Image 1 (cartoon, rainbow, N blue to C red):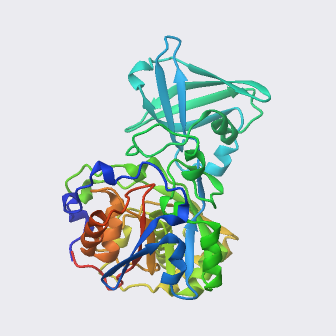
Image 2: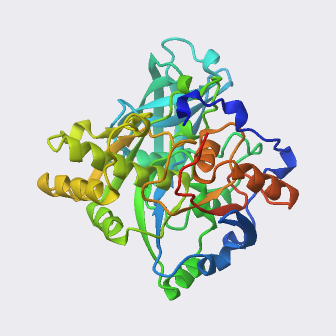
Image 3: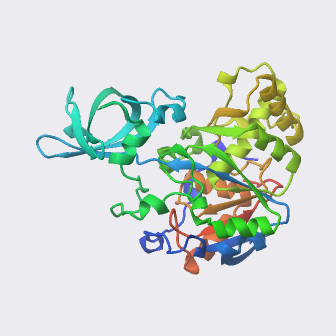
Length: 416
């Protein structure tokens, strides 16, 4: 079987006309169309009828991250505009929940629109009007990184948190392929109804279709649901520029999963459906964390991570069962008195990967030559082409505000 590093991204492309990209969400979230792929067959329905297409006693897992208003526009004294797009707290690995509550100052890795206009040593300033008076925000560049800049942000008075500051002055960062200005409705619609923890710069878009009505129908069909938290970084839109995947560096993200959920997954064993690629990457990462702890139970919590190629490095070793892996993780968490596991995952799921925990995936349609499309191909093999051809031929809407799919995962492994 070919190692995923040898894959050519050009084999995972398709023609996506501009008019197939949804620029706006539908009036009703759950009125979006749902393509169902199961046992090689393609059918379709609406999201509001999702419960009919899932087995009884299934477990759905969602990502409850919340999109922050990560874009801040500064105006230079000369009138020129500079956009600061907050990507991740700096240094990497900072607890984003704590960072969002910082008062008076914050340091972030940011992309800068109009960086050439921002001269060395220049401090940008923005005045923000709010009910309590005026807030003055200042920004300065402290370091240049490979694809971004480290920006120091300071604000006075300092009695509001960074999360509150962004809410007052920032805007929701719509994906770059939605070529229009942000509108007021995006503040609500580019957010799941269950979004809870501030920290993402992109929505876990598979969840945008879910409504209270759907959750009620799931409960009536004895289908339970739980939440993980993985804050989505701008790396989710990072194009694959290398010819072969071995030259592409997968973006890393921090996942937060409660002990109770790990135990529930271990007991559930089957019919576990992930809502969104971020959720699936997190759930599958639990297995690989457990494998590491099964082999090395003395691992320090600070060293807990899943590297990009880790799932493919142990192919010639005896496979550790999902049960042994998860209970190793559970035992380690209890030993360290951890109610939740907080770990870095860089996992790349591509053809050659066999799903360990997830039975199915609910997701939107993804961009050509993207790591998200590779993930879909890993789960259903070359049938991803049939699915996408069907969707294009039958008027499905693509990408973040578009329609979606329910994939039943082919567990036997895909030959590539």
